[in-house]
Length: 206
Ligand SMILES: *[C@@H]1O[C@H](CO)[C@@H](O)[C@H](O)[C@H]1NC(C)=O
Ligand SMILES: *[C@@H]1O[C@H](CO)[C@@H](O)[C@H](O)[C@H]1NC(C)=O
Ligand SMILES: *[C@@H]1O[C@H](CO)[C@@H](O)[C@H](O)[C@H]1NC(C)=O
Image (cartoon, rainbow, N blue to C red):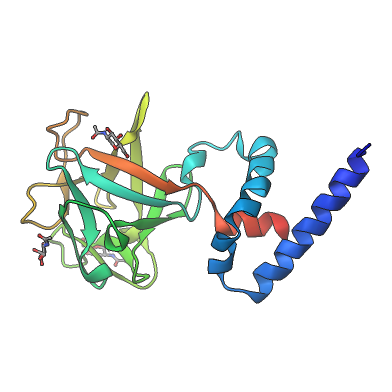
């Protein structure tokens, strides 16, 4: 019979093994160990994560945004260092944003070249992916629709919402309206690619 002492002993050994791997390997290895991590993640979710609001948007979660009106994905042009465009029909690396969670509603978005998405400093209300470190202008609020949590609107630091005006224009933060209609240029369909959180997992295992 496996006593609870044994279970925790095995778990502790396992976690110290994982922690030693984590300290010697880069973060990619953690993704390779996905099967093992799911065991840990499942255990942690039960005991630790249930009370967290927006627990599907933990630190490190990868997301994609599709304008419902235009049926196009947001993309960091060139993977970063440039503007954010709205003209992609199928998502890949440039269309994927990694969340840095500030709190349950506010986030930074990191693009594949590691820059952060932000409001242009030029006062144009354009959204660019050009900053190496996040600041006020790189902070966004994700507003989810009640009962349809993947239908989102995104507010920028100027208080206005991101809008997809046309697929030949860059993304801007200049929509002051409200509503959740399919035709609303500020409404996006958010796809969550992974729920795993490298930094939270590390915090627990260290
Ligand atoms: C998307 O828009 C950018 C900027 O206007 C342009 O450089 C790029 O070629 C466009 N890509 C597609 C797939 O239309
Ligand atoms: C934020 O962007 C505004 C223009 O949109 C600019 O005036 C301001 O200096 C920026 N703030 C920082 C800290 O970069
Ligand atoms: C949103 O995307 C999901 C797939 O991620 C899809 O099943 C759903 O139909 C989309 N919703 C809208 C309104 O486009």
